[in-house]
Length: 332
Image (tube, rainbow, N blue to C red; front, side, top):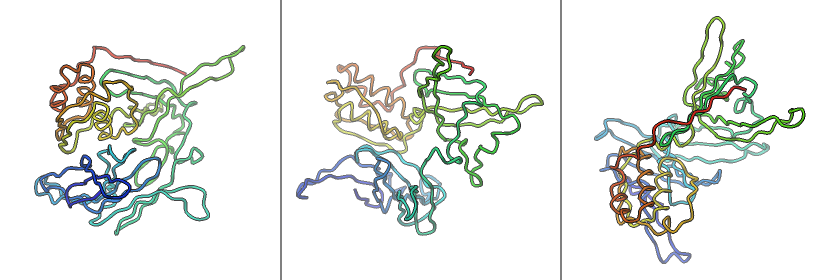
């Protein structure tokens, strides 16, 4: 993997280093508008982590910045669009890694560049600033599942006496388990036995909090959490136009999902997935990712018009879901 100052290229070689094969670019050129330098690859948390410095002089976009961007991959082929380390503006190389300091048992994350170094600890349920069991506080919750949209969860928590207020994060000041984008794991089950005293529960879904609302009145003190599952990443917009040539359907779906940040995707092992291909596919800049996956899957269901759909899947309209949604409202 290397950079020419604007593009991030990926190549492979045989064991002797005599044959090199170019793979699709990780990040294509953007008319020299955005520079990408000092790429570095690390491996931790079962993912390859690619850091590079992105710089924009504002000539075309009007936005001037220079930040490290971190992309992730499971296989060194399909890469996410990545995220920017906003608290670490820098001009030269940046590094991100995970290690366990001497005389300690807990690993930490380190992000470093010339101006600053940032530290963070890995997740542990024993850490009260990272984990909290809200089961006893749940007044009610509503799950909403609808085709073509992320699954949603609304949870109402009892905050009597402001007992949960101290567990809500205030970014830049205090870090607590109830915060924006933190994971919210939902378990459901039954009480069994005679009498029914044995709790049997399974994890049914994992969500990420997108909104925290304090609801207060003379007779009410509650916290409402609005959360969505990770498929919400498919509603992002593709940052740069990318073209692909002669790739099978399974490769295209994996690539599109990875661009959005969904790196672990299970696909059926069918002949269509491995043989259906498109001579040329284009994922245009600013296109929402979800319609691209819809059209790619639809193309695989009908080989007679695969080429037509995949060649222009970025410009196609998303599939129209049936009306209505599945809603489940529960009280503990």
